[in-house]
Image (cartoon, rainbow, N blue to C red; front, side, top):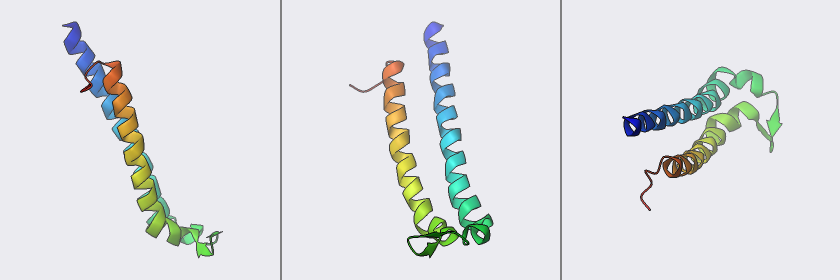
Length: 86
């Protein structure tokens, strides 16, 4: 029973991580890259409008960073619940 509870806690934490990371990804790619692009275009980053940067580079860079963060979070979570492969 306690192992089952531990696995439920593991999945709860996993889903919390995924929810937070998807919210960040949605905010950067959809909100900043599409909905707020006109407002952000008033700000320049490296000579380019910020809305354009978010739509092209920012969402890709953020997505790669989120993957790295997720891998690190899951590795530490696996060790915490002793379900890691090593």
